[in-house]
Length: 143
Image 1: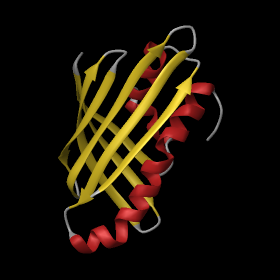
Image 2 (image 1 turned 135 degrees about the vertical axis):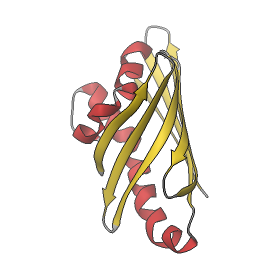
Image 3 (image 1 turned 45 degrees about the vertical axis):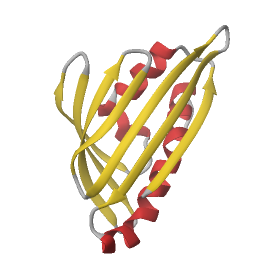
Image 4 (image 1 turned 90 degrees about the vertical axis):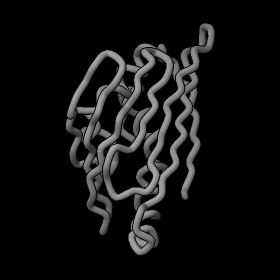
């Protein structure tokens, strides 16, 4: 299983960053390798979404249930896809007069061991670039 943790400090409000993170339909505009972002269902506290990822030989789709705590946290859990495990969390911590600290944690493992050998490094690269893409988007620049 691979695990990633990244943090960033941004001169943005938690509300602005939460809106950016939960605007899943726009991910193909700025997330590296994201080719599809479809909302399957949405409520005030939950978004079920299907994402497509294309990176080298990796071409896959997966669906996650994203639990929303407005302006505070988004927790992602696998519904279906080629993973044995896929979990993620965006945590937003306001910093007085300075903006917000954003923490991203992700864990994943492919269900097929052969797929894991081939695709985990490619998916890891995509996950590794995720925070940079969101920071650039929040600042209004390209990653």
